[in-house]
Image 1 (tube, helix red, strand yellow):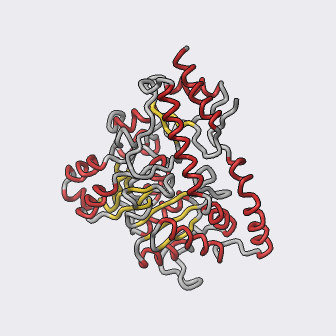
Image 2 (spheres, one colour):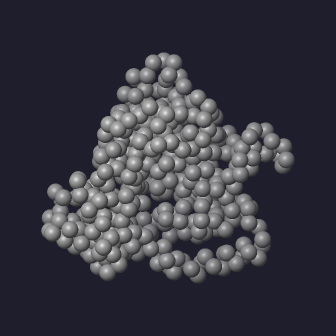
Image 3 (cartoon, one colour):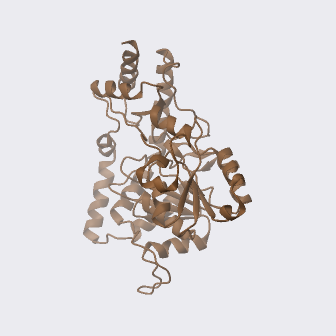
Length: 378
């Protein structure tokens, strides 16, 4: 049996009749950049997230970059974030000449350790702490970070909070949606995400009209009005085709999320029935709505062997992420070394993502667990 890590073709077949006429309409109009489809998508996503402002941009990476720019982050500023996430989180900081400052993760959720954040700030001398301007918590794998305590800490130190919700559209913390609790929220619509476009696309949510206006100006090279440049921005525009696809898919997102959550519950039952609890640590559901962008298990000492074995049995898996950011070669000048963030390093060595997409069948889920059982029974 084949069980891919993700099957986007199955999703497309279910919405093809909605997608194709909309693409044809855009092709007929020849209105490809920004415009009414982008405005419609922004309005729908602002309503879905329950946030006053939403600005469509060219990718999730550009969402992070433009959010940092809107917050005034620049050379010499420090921004605190997680060492265990996709590269773009820290890469966007460095691209602006700012300095990423890493804080270790929690071992259960893989999100930023908020107590570690408080300790890091407390240990800094006044001069160094004055250069810290923002914090980027990452809602990794579809579960929100501990935002209540994090917001309290950031308000105390007057730090801007930019949520990296690239993997967390629709996830909730105590009834609040991801990307709506900080000053700015960043989303990715990369095709493999729970809400994916047909190419690169992203979104930034904002809590104030001032930030919304600044984001919209930065999106078009800092231009307002046309050909008059108040600030230096970039080309962060989202195109109409991507916006239209995202808007259509948004109507199905909660159904797909329910499917992912049900698959996660089925996995838990199957792993328990197979007696694998001591061999495989399953994802912890700590916050109120985990949307399972990934179903990540932890396997001590045998992760790579299990990955290879599952691949031989036709089961797709992935390691997110094999090298923590503080150990990436491009960040060597930050001065971090192995052992500085032990939980992030342990997660990089032990975690493995299993298929979780909503179109999976009971038979496929059972096959995945049967294959894992067979690996440990060898």
